[in-house]
Length: 285
Image (cartoon, rainbow, N blue to C red; front, side, top):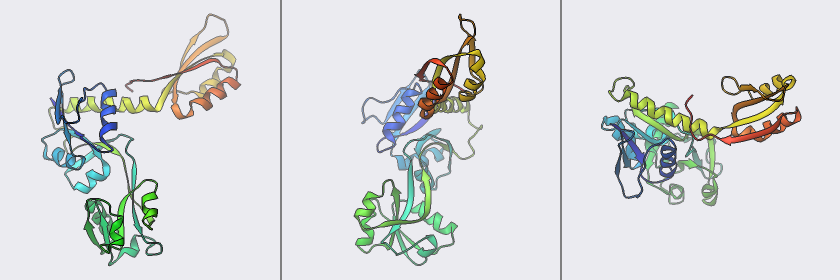
């Protein structure tokens, strides 16, 4: 039975559960449940603190897990990312009072407060910067005002909370994070559950594609087919079928969802008609 770690709370929890449900896996009904078994798919889910998941996976007690890239790197655990999931995206940045620093090279001799000590210490070491790192569990933007540090390093989304604290970001991003699937380093191909791991990854990849693409169907005249196919090349090639009315064909292809409206306009302009889009709920590529 495949043993999988899932975030039990926070910004990772809900989207992870939604994706697993879309992939056909049973999920918990109550937030207090810490473990459930999905006998149909031969999977056991463990709901754990996101920060702990990389540790559990690296120990070999759990086969794979879903956590944040930032949490994986910060943990220093012997685990590796095997599939990015596209949600819970964030950017990790340095911030200080205006004019205090312009880049990582200005941090020499300074104190940096952060909730991600492993990431920051590693980043400073990579750049050869000798600076002190103070670990705080939250609300790091107050560290400068209270004199704990001259600089902070934190997740930045809109930057509103930093501006409200009189701070500004500087330098290049330390890292960009998102939800990822992880497994123990070097476990690829070594475990008896390898086929189940690959099946799990294919299911999640299918969800990612289904969320990104729509299926587009339309009719067009044969003489316009090449122009139409250029607009809707599909993944390998579109499906083209003759219609009862001579000189017309029906075309079906997957197209990026964010470009669907533009493509429909372009198809209409070259004479295509009966243009329809439908959502994709699952797929295997």
